[in-house]
Amino acid sequence: MRVIGGSARGRRLKAPRGLRTRPMADKIREALFSMLDSLGIRPQRVLDLYAGSGAIGIETLSRGARWVDFVDRSAAACAVIRDNLTATGFADRGAVHCTTVQAFLRRPPREPYDFVIMDPPYADPTIHETMLAVARSPHVRDGTILVVGHSPRVPMPERLDGLEQLRDRCHGDSCVAIYVIRRGERAEAEDEGDP
Image (cartoon, rainbow, N blue to C red; front, side):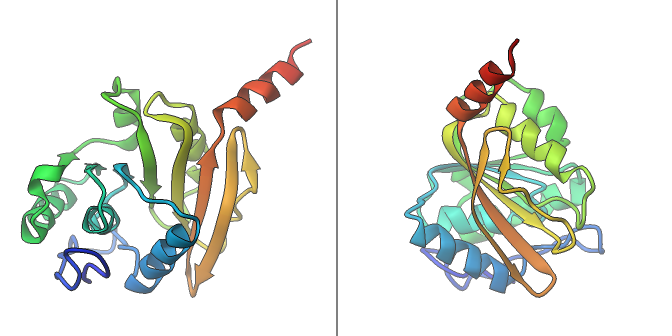
């Protein structure tokens, strides 16, 4: 596994040992960043949830992001992310938070993120609930992009309470969906539901 574009292109990345962490394959990461380029999306302040090796967040740093917060509950994964940040020269542009996604989202934010990556365990049955938790959290703002890695067996909604799908692509047994958070649409939907 390696960085596929930007200033750290070609740098090798470690992955945590064992099968619990399933890093997003180079091919799907390449497809993701190609889609982001075609949409004119240039991440600046990034939140990488279920970060694993940190490969996606590090890819955004390589391509010009200012800052990435990496969140993973596994101590082994957190150690690997720190090693990968050092190896790629980005240790001063990211922080690793060894906690659950839910606990991190409950923390008060310093500054909203314009880009959130969510690559949960394969075929996670709570994926839609976590997407909603991200969309409703104070860590994001109107216009924040949410990228979700998912199994082809998990259908992704075109709209979900303020989330609007921009793209959804699969390569083999890995898929990635790109959403934009529309805070105004969620408020309008709530108003329409009022008696």
